[in-house]
Amino acid sequence: MSVFQVDRAGMHYDLRGQKIIALAPSSLSAQQEEFIVVRGKSGAGKTTLLSILGGMLRPTEGRVHLGSVELTALGPAARAKLRQTSIGFVFQSMHLLPYLDLLDNTRLAGGSEARARELLEQLGLGARIHHRPAELSAGERQRGAVARALVHGPALVLADEPTGNLDPESAALVLEAFQSFRTNGGCLMMATHSQEPIPGSRTVYLGPKGLHSADER
Amino acid sequence: MSILRLVTKELLLRRWSALLAVSALGATVAAALFFFLLARSNEGETRILQRDMGLNVLILPPGTSLDAYWSQGLAPGSMPVEFLLELEDQGVANRLVPMIKRRHNWQGREVLLTGISGEIFKQGKAMKPVFGRVVEPGSLVLGDEIARLLSLEEGASVELLGRTFGISRVLAPVGDEQDVQVFLDLEDAQSLLDLEGRITEIEALECHCSEEVADPLAALRAELDPLVPGAVIVRREALADARRDQRQLAGRFLQSGFPVIAGLCALLVGALCMLNVRERRAEIGVLRALGKSSGQVAALFLGRAAFLGLFGGAIGVLLGGFLASDLGRVLFETRAGAVNLELDLVLVALFVTPAFAAVASLIPVALAVVQDPVRVLGETS
Image (cartoon, rainbow over all chains, first blue to last red; front, side, top):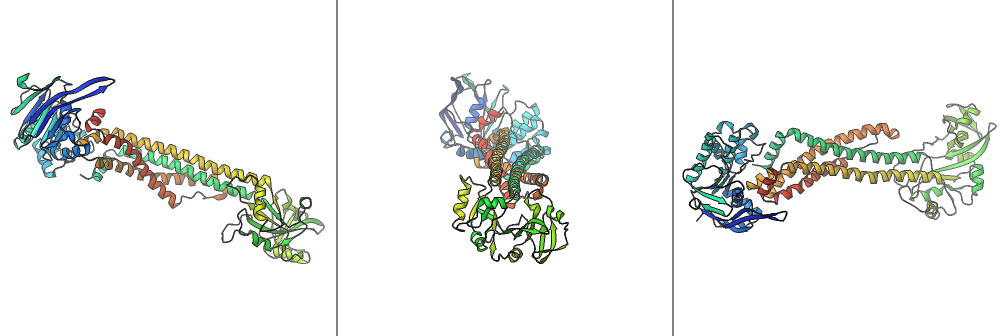
């Protein structure tokens, strides 16, 4: 069974009488141990696609399944519960809570303290676990956000430009953590501007007509 | 991670912001409480000042001609002292003071002999006597002018109608009839004047103060006449009306002013709480994105608001109570320390402030948690 299946999901809204298409109808599915990279221009709908997949936004058309559950048929509370158990999310703006240290921020998503410490060590943040976000660099905050997305052992991790603002060394640590998650049975979808190839990943492009594979470019 | 831990961590990091919020909440609670306590004390103070202006109802023996009363300053006839018992438990004339008044030529001077006893209150009601014209048996209290004319001083012994009395007190000049009055105990007066079991008038305090009565004199007569048939009821209109109007004014000031002040304070508290939640909408979005339930998110924000409200309320109670009490001592000299902060008022403030702060926070929290997390994050990023 696929980890997720997007079936002609699209998103549009009205802005002062004008129809704005945030995501053209798109279809996609992914299996376990799959790493999908979504590339596309700014405004193509990458964040919208990830938000729909994460159950944080309900599409205006189409359907989305997470495993056997139709995500688009669930209410906000049920989607929140599903996110807590099955989905990890790395935001473009990180969104760590400013009053919690890195360890507590990581544990906010659930999981054990030991697992949180292990992930933070793996991401090179072992010495920074009791530092608050304001005391960390942008790269360290982003790696902390990655640890938070992985700590509760989700089936699917969605990452929105997680390496966009990172130095090459930090970006490599993040990608290493993602690869480790994938090889341990996880499914990962990452939106990025970067054209750098990512080993073991499948790239899809998002444009005005929706998603298409690399071969269709 | 528990909600309490999150609330504590947030408060510790943003301690100055929390302190400011507590101060603002405290100041608003203090302002409301300060106004309420002072307005209430002002009402009480007004009541006492107005009461001290004097008794405003006269009950005279049946058949008394008012032209005779006003020209002589006393009622020629008398009535049985039992009238007092009849009047003791009605609701329109309080603080009954029974008297005997008779003119008498004493040592070549015309004086007004006034036998008097202490105030008689409603049955079973403990009240503090305020008129203070109680005279001990065997003693006299003299008005200033008559004492001066007869060269009599406190402590001296003097004969009156064949009986020796001690002068217990000489009153300060007041500029009215009292300056030529000679006060003595009611029973002494009854004995000296051969009026055992009789009195010549009863003074009382009208008690229509807090309600609007179209014809107060008719209302008094309607209430008292069945109890003391034929008695002549006189209402000192100017005195009674001034007392009633002033009391009503003080009451209106409290009744209309306090809701306005309390409403404005509530508005400020509400705005503060709503502002705090709006500033932290991104956190709501993150917590919702991480799968926290609406209840958990609401508990985090409402818990914080209630926590700050409790501290703000406590500070407000202390500050408002202290300021009102301190200023009250200056304002209300005749009732020093009359500004009392009762336990029930403290409990109301300590309960209402956190509850209100939580309710005020509930609105923006509820609006944020029902939205898709991405929308909340999008609005705040």
